[in-house]
Length: 265
Image (cartoon, rainbow, N blue to C red; front, side, top):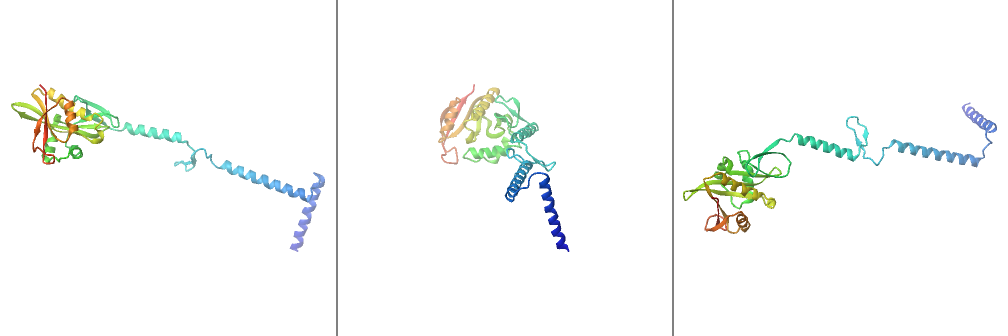
């Protein structure tokens, strides 16, 4: 009985199709029906592709995920750069102000990150920076006594900062020579990578101004290894004269040193 029912339904549907064709448009041939079905299928596929394209985000904008909502976001790279700049500005605002000194010894203020050469005091907190600097600059190792004295040298020592990084230093002491006071340059050096930035000149000018402020200082002097011609030319350019060779001054080779002197008053 079920088979008859299906057959009946099929025959009824064919009759309905024929009645519609008689009442409406003329009945289509088999080839026309086949073409119509192909066209309908083609239109259906094109509509499906268009709907998928509308659902996808534009490929011209980078796809990111909004953390707060979990939905895709299409913010441009320009907006991202602006956000990074704003974050950098906020970070700079919380950088602490650092105390520094100019070449005249006057305190100045600068925000970390600014370019420039500044002089800072040598203290127990940064004495290790001075030690590492000397180890990188000079061929000899200074003993612990040197750094104990440097920790409390006050105005007789300065660290040179370039873009807030220690790149040079000067350390002095006051000696008595022939009933006169003299300023002895124990060390004055700059890291090799920063020797064309005028840092050495800033340090020697600080020492010279220090001599002029201390009226009891009559001369300034130092020793330089005989093979260090660059240092000799540097000091001669700043008014020092070569007073001869001191034999066996150093424990390293070459052992001889030049004695360079500058008369202050």
